[in-house]
Image (cartoon, rainbow, N blue to C red):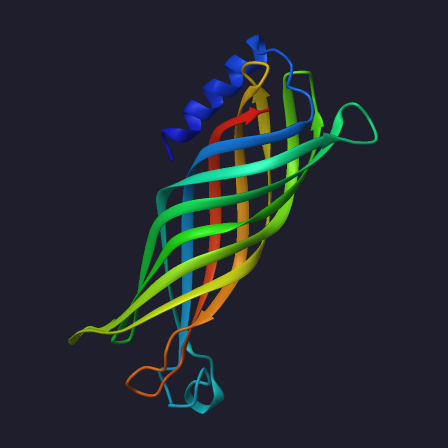
Length: 224
């Protein structure tokens, strides 16, 4: 991430001073690098066998882990100026190959949650600041596909779980024209409170995983 952001800033600066205007409205494709941060907060009842209750009705024990890794994203979209010449809306579908993993240790239980891929759609609302630079906000829905490997500190892995969950995504970005059809962009994306339940463990206890995602994306778009 420390290398990606300066490169994005350099590309945007070069584009700001030398790029021509954006291409006309229409379809586009994009390729990007994601810097994805996964934060996992796991709640597990360590007091009784009643799922997610805790001792004497108290809260479950909670642990967390946060990791960042790199992924690759592909997208296809359509852009259209509306209302005014400098205001536009676009819709985009995307697929991302991800590779980020968090590990939680809750009492004697170890859980590794790996994000394998994401896909979904965005709606972007933007404005052309100049004929070379635009800024936009986005909202959308993202499907998170992940695996979970469950083990204990005193034993080998005992269970695997796979799940995919949809979550609301919001964020924003900036786009700069490089040529008439090629532009570069930098974007941030947030998805929070993505929940899934792992299998009941050997003590009869149900654990709940609460996942938060922060994505920084930089890449290129080609307009047809």
